[in-house]
Amino acid sequence: LRNQPKNPKVLNNLGQVYAKSQKYKLAENMFQAAVVVNPGYGIAQVNLAVLYATLNFHEKAMMHVKAARDLGERGLLVQKLDRFYKLK
Image (cartoon, rainbow, N blue to C red; front, side, top):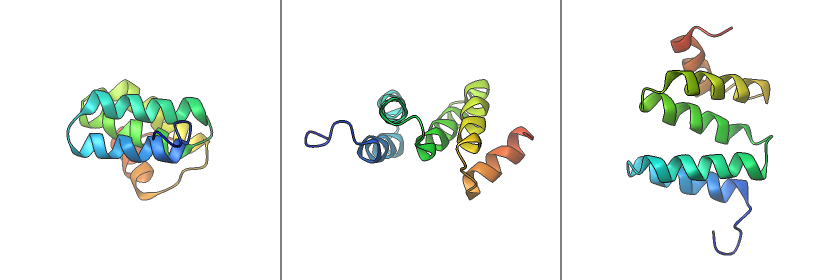
């Protein structure tokens, strides 16, 4: 991160490490930073959706699922979240 502070992949990966360590606020900050640096980086939107779903912030989760889908993300997590939230 020190060498590439504005690399969305680095920010996203650090967010995943924090999320797996249950450091949810730090994870949220990293995922959001990745989106700010690159608004078209859909995987960070997916990770925000998963994080918010985990924390039972369902409105926020749905918003980020929709954003990820709008950016072309169609992976398994997006499909599962779509079904969970019954999004169309």
